[in-house]
Amino acid sequence: MGQTKGKGLSRRSFLHGAGGMFALPTIISAAALGAEGRPAASERIVMGTIGFGGRASGVMPAFMREDDVQMVAVCDVKGNRRKLGQDTVNRHYGNTDCDAYIDLRELLARDDIDAVLIATGDYWHSAAACLSARAGKDMYCEKPMSVTITEGRALAETMKRYGRIFQCGTQRRNVSQFMFAANLVHKGLLGELKTVHAEKAPNWHETYETVLPAEPEPPREVFDWDLWLGPAAWRPYNSKYPSRGFWGGHLDFAGGSYTEWGSHTVDLCQWAARKDDTSPAAYHLVGKDVEAYYEDGLKLVLRAGIGRGSCGVRFEGTEGWIEVDDSGHIDVHPESLRSKRKLGKGYPVDDHVRDFLNSFKSRRQPAAPAEGAHRSITACHAANICRRLGRSVKWDPVKEEFVGDEQANRLASRAYRQPWRL
Image 1 (spheres, rainbow, N blue to C red):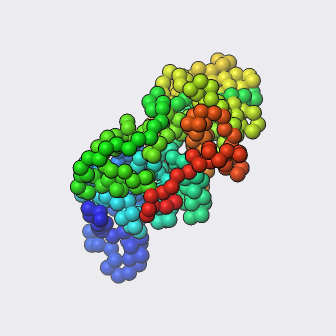
Image 2: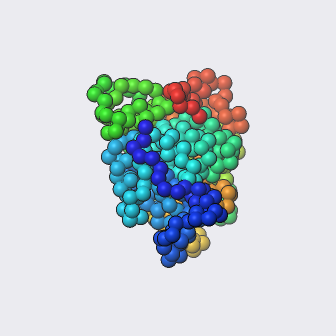
Image 3: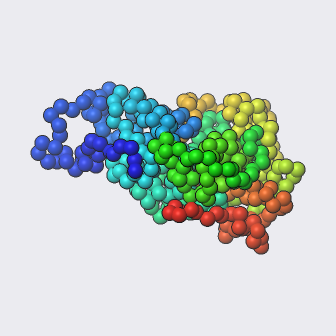
């Protein structure tokens, strides 16, 4: 099934064998012993990467920059991405030890791997995370963590059941300007929080469903179409599907603008409002946008045009407001609040990666755990359902179902294609 098999001693085999005579090789590399301050091989977190697309090409190197990580395997259904990922790892470590797999199940079967980076397409995130948890792996999983509400709940429950550490790739929880904005709310410096604004992505404003005409399917080693589809509904191969610009708005594979940036910006709003254990209870169409209300009256507005860069958020209270985005620019009122900021350091993904690794070691929840990620993406999915139906919907955040609305509840889940399951 996979291209290559795991090779060399696993970390656990190394530890078990060390107590026996002649268990260690005669010559041990300086890197293995932890020279130059790097932890010895037996103390490193052994990792694999599942999906080497645009996100992984940035996040995987962030993991490898950490001295206590050893990346040993890459999996991707596309042959060119699989080779690129493998070469990236080997080039970083100066060896040829990285294994490459087509099927994520083969990577997850390796007992020497402690944790995985999941950076597949959106519709694969929940299934890959649940498979990883059942295989005993902790995970850093790219956002959005689900493409339906029921997927997110299943993922969160699976993490609890298996006691796994799950960090959602909503890295802005570890970015200084967003941390500053949330802290102003948490410390009551904006007064009583009244309205939070979350920016939606400029692309994929409209979601869609379509089946494209069949084209000749590539050889499996070039592109495994069946595995690319994974739990999504089967359809004949067409070369247009794998383009992120296409599948990012397709409802079988993603959720369009609201889940693309909303997974970050709604998440930041929920974090600031300390609502990681709930979601808004009512959703209303206002033009092409959605306004939602929590049970306590807090208003959430999902719209475009917040801030001066991407992924903008705005928090409004009775005594002030703040607006921040990826550009680093901060608009705040009163201006005197600006002095409360403490500058952060490091590239955003690095800090979020480090937070996950620290949680791996301590077994404490990271900055973006499964339950919080599920609750925030639930708001995005509910907003999408509101837009698809063209009317208001009511959500029960305790029962996690739409109130008296069979049509909306049908859109909260999807059937998984066999043999995949949550």
